[in-house]
View 1 (tube, rainbow, N blue to C red):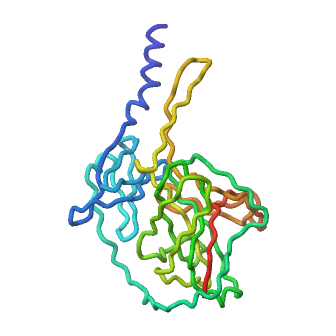
View 2 (view 1 turned 90 degrees about the vertical axis):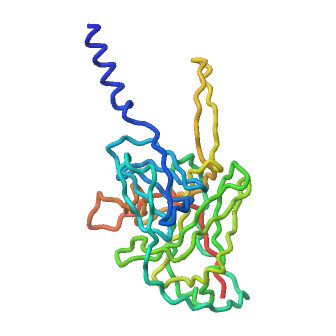
View 3 (view 1 turned 120 degrees about the vertical axis):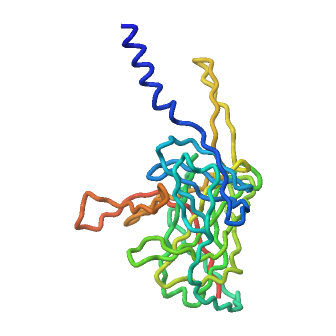
Length: 292
């Protein structure tokens, strides 16, 4: 009996013995560190972000692969055992001609408001959640995106967050980033509606719509350490979360997209293949303010 218990104990410990902290650094071809790189376990739910100096730490088993992606560089997939130094190559793509037009800024229109706004925040892990804004003909007199507004519960002063704007591909999926540089912003402490000015990006509202998303950065500056105490067992356990807690609306949609394992996954009701059944989803409380 003791031998059986001993064997069972070893088997239970075995999977956890393989899970350990993997450390590395992400650099460019000139050996300069790349900050705020999105790092995901391939086909998994876990991920992290590189720090300002390019370093990162992630819990992963050796047989897994990690996906590294950041604006301006080619996406790269590496074995978890080969990420002590990850070199990303600059992305080469054909830039569309940017026509810089001086906006009049005499009109403003906020879009994206929900009728019944019910906000909820989650202590979630690494996420890139987005909201789709369809184009309406009524936007013809306010074509340019001036502000992105974001509702968030920020627990740390000067929390850093990254925003993205994606075009829509022929299948309705998020496609290319419309912003040619990272949109990084810092949020003030508290439950606030922050307004991020992107006028200098000169982005016109696309006629097939636009996806706007936030990326939660799993970096030391955003880290919150909590100690939870179980009074019954007289034990304390540490818990790590990351600020901010973006607020969400619970809304009815035809479908939603989830960024998981380094790719976008479409979520919809699969029970009725031939009908347009709507689903209830949590959508980030993001709005756009347009101008002329």
